[in-house]
Image 1 (spheres, rainbow, N blue to C red):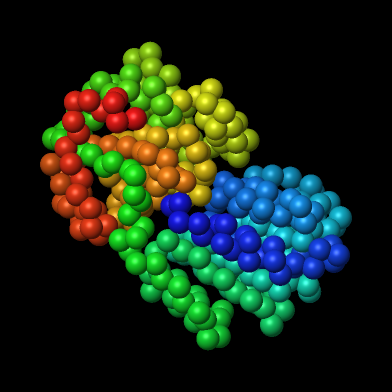
Image 2 (cartoon, rainbow, N blue to C red; image 1 turned 135 degrees about the vertical axis):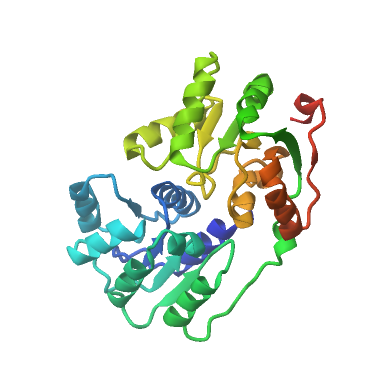
Length: 328
C-alpha cells in the first residue's frame, strides 16, 4: 500500500545478519508467490552491497532446485507457508541458525487459511527468535497470532486515515445495472490505453469473462488470476511491467505487494467486498508519490459499499468528470 512495510522489515533483517555465516538466519512468510518474489527482490536490492544471499521458496517451482539452492547456503528465505513447511520437513531448510521470523500481510495469510501451517512452522524454529508481524489491517485473529508467537510485543499502529493514499484522485461512475459496466469500460478504453491501467474484478471466473468480452471488441488486454499456472502468471506480469501490455484485468491476488511503478489508473469494475482491500487496490496507482486515478463502477446495489469505503477511509469519492484523460 506504499507505506513502506516491506522496506522496513527488509532493512531490519539485513542489519541483523552475520554475512560470514552462510546459513538461513531469517525466514519471511508471505501469502502469495508474487508477494514472496517481490520481497525477495527488495531484500536483494537493499542488501546488494553486503552480498546477501536470498531465496524465494514458493509453490509452482522445482522442489529439487529449491533443495539445491538451500543446500548451497543462503542468508534469508522468503516463501509461502506450504513450500517453506515442506522444505523444513524434508530438512532441506535447516532452522538451527534462524533468529528472525517475519509474517508479512498476516491478515491475508489468515484469510487464506494458513494459520495451522504457520503454527507448524513456528514449532520447528529455535525458541529464542525475534518475530515481526506486518499487516495493513489488524483483525482479532492477527492479534491472536501475535499473542501466541510473541512475548511483550512492541505494537506500532498507523492511524487509519494516514493510510489514505494522498495524490490519488478517486471517482465513481454510476452504472445502475451490472450489465452496463462493460459498455462503460469500453467507452473508457482509449483513456486506459494512454497509460498503464489495472482493472479489478471479484472472481477468477469474471476475469476470464471480462477478458473475452473486451477482446471480442478488438481491445487489447492481458489478465492474471490464481488459477493460472505460475509460469503463465510470471510471463504476463513481466509483459505488464515492461509496458508491452498496458491494461491488466485481475483479482485481489495482485492487489497486495506487486510493484508496478508506472500504473496510474485503477478501475474497480467490481467494488471490493471488504473496505480494507480498497486501499490495496488503489494503492497500486500512487506509489512513491506518483499521481494516480481510481475509478469505481457503482451499481445501485453497490452504493452502500461505496458509502462504507468513504466512511472507513474518511474520504469523499466524487463523480467522474468528463475530462478524465487530463487527470492522468
